[in-house]
Length: 450
Image (cartoon, rainbow, N blue to C red; front, side, top):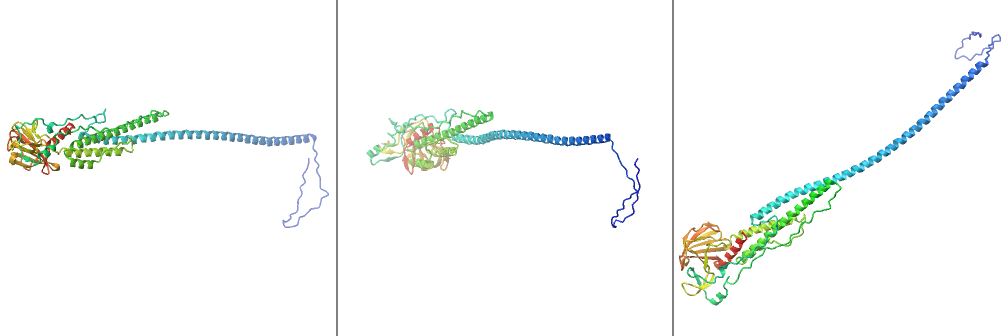
C-alpha cells in the first residue's frame, strides 16, 4: 500500500516572488503497476463509450433527417390542401357569383314587374276615369267591339218639302216681296236635303303577340317573364281602349259639327277652330301613351263644349204630333192674296195643345203682339230668338228662365190666323231663319242620343 507523505510548505505572500524548493534527495517515490485485465477492461469501457457516443450522435443525426423529411412532407401536404382549398374557394366564389347574378336578375325582373304593375294600376285608374267621362258624354264602348259601330243613315225631315199645304190653319205676319221671281228662285230649304254622315273609322294597331320564347332556365324567371308579357298585353289593351274612345269621340264631334254646319255656320266655324283635334295615330308605345291620353281628354272636352253649344240651339220641336200646314218661304198671303214671305213654320194642332220651348233661354216677351196675337218670345244663346205666336194661353212671363221642353203656352188662333195652329219663328239679328233646318238638325242629333 502506498503511503502518503505529508509535507508542509512555508507561507508565501501573494505579492512575493515565487519560491521553488530544492529537491529533496531523501523523499520517497511510489510506483504503480497495471495488470492486463485492467487494461482490457479500460479499453472495453472506452470502446463502449465511443460506440455509445457514436450511436447517440447517429441517432440524433438520423432523427434530425427524419424530422426534416416529415416536416417537408407535412409542408407539401399542407400546400396541397391549401391549393385544393383555394380551388374549392374559387369554385364557391364562381357559384356564389352566378347565384348572385341570377338573384340580381330575378330581383331586377321582380322590381320591373312591380314597377310596371304599379304603372298599370295607375293607367287603369286613368282609363277608367276616361271611360266614365266618355260615358257621361254619350260615348259607350262595348268590351268586344272597342270601335264605334257604323251609325245608320238618317232620313231628312219632310219639314222643308211639303207636297200640299193645308190652308185651314195658317197665319202670321207677312212681309211683301218686291221681286217674287227672285224670291221663288232662292227658296230656302225646299230642294236641299241633308246627306247622312258616317262615323270616321281609323285602324287601331293590334297589340303585338306576347313573347313565346320565354326563358326556361329558371322557373321564377319564366314566371316573371310570363307576368311581364301579361302586363304588356294589358298595357296595350288600355292604350287601345284610349284610342277607341278618341276615335268614337272625334267621330261624334264630326257628326255634330256636320249636322249643325248648315244652321250655324259661324258658330260651327268657331267651335271647329277651338277644337283642333284629329290626325293619324302612331304605333302604340309606352312613350306615346301620354300623348294619346291627352288627345282623348282633349276630344272629350271638345265634345262636351260642342254638345253644350248644340243643346242650346233651338232644335227641339215646339209641338208634338203635329203636321205642317205652311212652310217657311214665299207664299200667297191668305188675307192679302199676294205673294209674301212667310218667316216661320205653321204647325196645325188641336186647340189648347201644349207648346214647348225649343231651347233654354230667357223670356223677353209674353203678351199680344199685333198680327201674331198672343205670343211668347225667348232669347237663346248665340244671338238666336224664337217666337211662338197665335197662342190661346200664355204659361210664362217676361223675365222667366226656361229650359228646352218647358211648357210656355197653348195652341190657339189669336191674331191673323185662319184656324188653330202654332206659328213658329227663329230669328238672329232680327233676320228670320228657316226653322226646318234647325228641326231637321235636332232630329238627327236626337238620333245620336245627344
